[in-house]
Length: 226
Image 1 (spheres, one colour):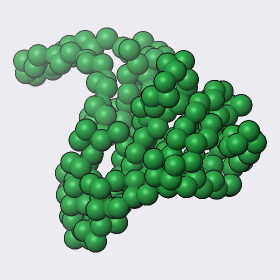
Image 2 (cartoon, one colour):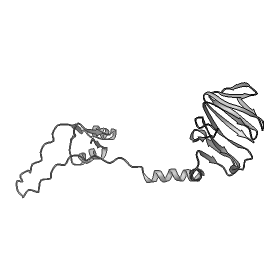
Image 3 (cartoon, helix red, strand yellow):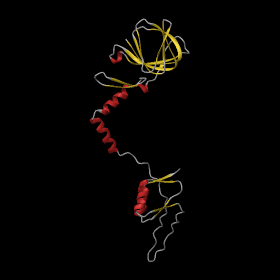
Image 4 (cartoon, helix red, strand yellow):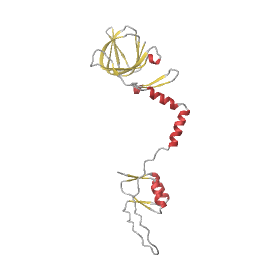
């Protein structure tokens, strides 16, 4: 495992009067360690450190020799608690923290992420939507949808996303339906005539219309029904 040497290890050596910091080839030096060494004339060396030996005393008993210890790797720096507190306090003062907490609590069991406002506004993040299969009567059809707006939002219409991939199926509109093609190609067959809608196109169906939906590729659309 590689060792990480920080500025505090270099400073400890300087306080002991050392000028050579012995390391091995697997040691990683932080920029702060290099700066501290350069500023104090300390050199890093991969040579074997000399063995500490007791020094004979001239007039009094020697003190026990202190064994040399290899430099210890420093722990990864931790985020200061005061910084965390300052960030959270700033968010709370601006009313952002409560909104985030409420948003996450409201997502429990939801197949998509949405932000809400007390006025009734709802923002659905389209890239978080998970889809479920739409029963077309043919299990092999690749048709999926997800409703994101309905009566739970105090809305009198329903809306969501739908995808159709390389298949066709019959459909009878139980209400008024509006589709906006986001990507791919949507084909609609009505009275034997095929209509094609591409990204940016909108298609409206009156209640009771009997058509056939399809796509030669993978189509994604946003729909609203009323």
